[in-house]
Image (cartoon, rainbow over all chains, first blue to last red; front, side, top):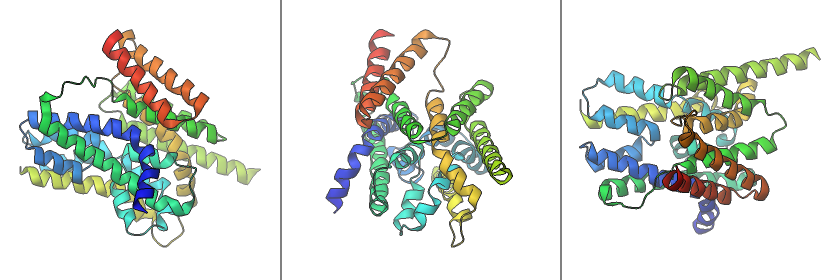
Length: 231
Length: 105
């Protein structure tokens, strides 16, 4: 059963494997080079499990910073994840204890993969979701470990391999575009991010784009509903 | 400050954020209508945002920075519309991008 599920799940996760192994390795290398124990790096990949935040964490752990600041920093960097669960509330209600882990593992990439699965029956989804989430985190942890252990020994030029993440988002974007009858939400997402990038810069864009995107969707939703009750 | 305590704080806050919607709307009650409709339109919007987010360090006005991205996205898109094979599109796009940034630009 597990073998069959693994066989079904692995192909979905290969793009994330490329990205997580390489970015995880970059994280591992940076951890060791910053003078932090590799085991703290692995601990973070196991229990924090948030890409961008863990890179910020390296700075946090190497500077004198107050706990309150750590909490707020984490909130700001990861707050976009607050919205991801909204897409799975109904579905996860039917799932057993495994859903606790799936919620913990709801990263950008895992969210994208799970949203992208449209050709499976409801019964298959629980195990498939679980294994995909687990595989993704394994790649991340293994990448961290390899990076921390091998560090500068690695000679293979991996420059640009992180484009796998962009390509993954592009492919899922296309799939959802082709499946949707309205394209405004997709365009709102692109526009909200571009506007925020322009006005807030690359380091500060996440929160404004999420807020912009979310309020635009709420507005759209209210307008559609208003239209329905009027007509 | 103790590193372990900082890591525990980061872990708890991150999990708390991801758990938030399930605590707010995941109980026995019916999920509010607006949450369900937002949940439905969120994935395409978030995917659009993540594309831009993953390219946030690209300098649009610098050809050597933006052209490889544009070409690789074009390859990914065309290949995907043609074959509809996720893995093929992603691997090819990534290979093209790596080749461009390592050898040409």
